[in-house]
Amino acid sequence: MYKSIIIGTGPAGLTAAIYLARANMEPLIIEGPEPGGQLTTTTEVENFPGFPEGIMGPELMDNMRKQAERFGAKFVTGWVNSVDLSERPFKLQVEGHGELVGESLIISTGASAKYLGIPGEKDNVGRGVSTCATCDGFFFRGKKIIVIGGGDSAMEEANFLTRFASNVELVNRRDELRASKIMQDRARANEKISWTLNRTPLEVVAGGMGVTGLKVRNNATGEEELIETDGIFVAIGHTPNTKFLSGQIETDAHGYILVKPGTSETNVPGVFACGDVQDSKYRQAITAAGSGCMAALDCERFLEGSMTHDWSQSK
Image (cartoon, rainbow, N blue to C red; front, top):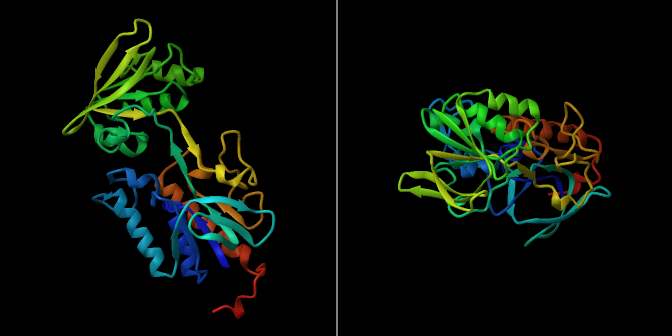
């Protein structure tokens, strides 16, 4: 039995852990096989406050974990296969640990960026392949960049990247775009954006220094082409990691957890959500960390006077 269980060890989950641990709540944090979230796939992080010279993503997450551990947070590693939120205390089935029980639950499982699944893509994440223009656009100042996608996200990323790149080439497998008309109009009005439509990406090409090109198939002719580039931004959306909840928490049409505006509260009392799992708009480390703080404070206030277990008899 735990006062609070946190699922996920990105900036949101670890910030929640720090706050709850400092409040003597002794939280248990469940981390998956890839601890630290999406920041562990990045190299240098330059936009997290407090690090004027920047900090490596994995180092930042390791520091957060150590800070939580310093105040008494406990960690276990394993997939959460299922949860029972029908009554308190909540029950979690965790691979390798059996059933874990908690008075409250903070969900900070994040959202996974969708990838194309082509050769060379995952191997070059952090070496020219990215899924976050806001995070990595600065590193491509004066460079030629490819954005892959045809939705609003791709239009937004392409427009943003023109602040840094000499040219942004938008590649889409169809000859028409899914993006809304207003987003398409903004992108087409940008002189720095060029269009390569009706091309299917086949392979990310890289050399010793990173990405050098994208191999595509011309769907009209069937011929393969090589587009030279310094960087590739994959902008085909994100998938919130909420499948394990089995519909017990209210989500939007895309699977993002719905929270009461201005709070981290879900539709289930005692269950809170923070980070990218409930944020489809900003998806930044600093906003995730801020929402983790909110979840911890909301959780602490909820537990005051609503404990189901007599903790005075616990060691």
